[in-house]
Image 1 (cartoon, rainbow, N blue to C red):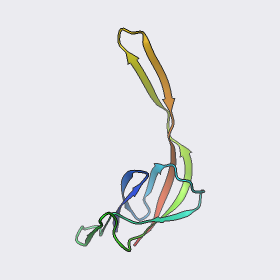
Image 2 (image 1 turned 120 degrees about the vertical axis):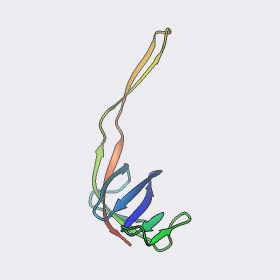
Image 3 (image 1 turned 180 degrees about the vertical axis):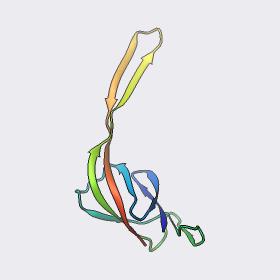
Image 4 (image 1 turned 45 degrees about the vertical axis):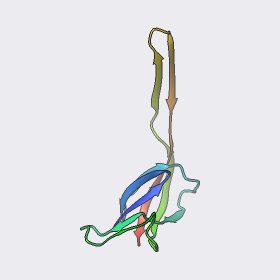
Length: 103
């Protein structure tokens, strides 16, 4: 089974046992959550169900594996000929999820 879900304003194509990184969710490690899928299909693409906006009765079960911070990203700003520079760093907070079941 294949599903498309929306978490944290991003869409993900997932299969059973996939591990995805999403924007931080307020869940503890080991918790499970279920979301409705926007699209559900089999691996061959023969039986496809498309929702408006979600497929009624669809359920994707996810398990929280970890809460972590991403690698540092450098944010550098500069204005030419004005002697203005700004150097900042940013680390996004992420949640690692594992797909347990797609129904």
